[in-house]
Image 1: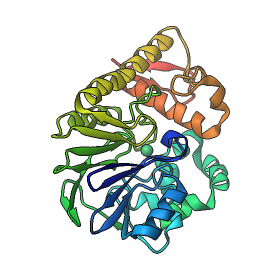
Image 2 (image 1 turned 120 degrees about the vertical axis):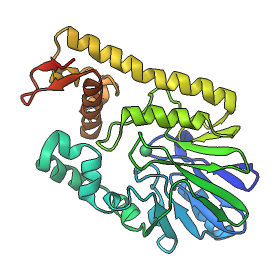
Image 3 (image 1 turned 90 degrees about the vertical axis):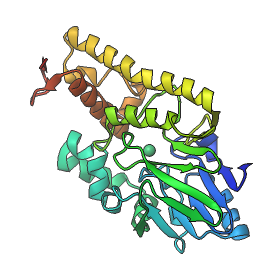
Length: 296
Ligand SMILES: [Zn+2]
């Protein structure tokens, strides 16, 4: 595990790829874990060896709250926007577009597939942190920046004294930006991404795969990453001009590889993601989903 001053960077299995994520462990005189997607054994060993007073989740997604359930006796906080929604299965279903795409029946089906831990991970959260406020955990100062877009409540922990930002799902992967829940927003995603570039920081730690970026690398990676949004716009616009219906659009594999769209959850996010781009491009999806109408 890598250490930068009092901060330990903890890897999740498989380079912190979804359904896992990277965690930070604040190793000052107070021990705080940020996100719990890292390797279970690493987390359990750390608690054993050093203690753990608090777990803070940047947002409610299962890959960032993965191992909350392993620590029933540790206090857990999440951002104030997602505290209520994340506490109920119904709230999570709504935020993840399951209700929007498939209605109540779909939600019921989805609920049956949920692992018990997922519910435990969220129901164990008992408090919230404030955005844009300086916290001190021992000698470590941290500010939870409100960086909506990926989800509406998504936060990036920023350590002003250390010049470090934990940028979570600004993961710079070739997959590109993810804003496919009903609580995701493309314009906010761009604005928050641009905000991260203005931070007085030289170390940017992503939540998945790639890892640690220096400022210039992060800037270049961000530009490339956000460009994927334009590419999706162009691709979808072209398909609509060629006469494809909404249903046909959702079978191509614009976000996810076509072969993975048999997975109902990925199909859900493929649909909701395309919907967002259609709105952005000025189309409306008619009730019957057969026709796409340009508004402007
Ligand atoms: Zn996420």
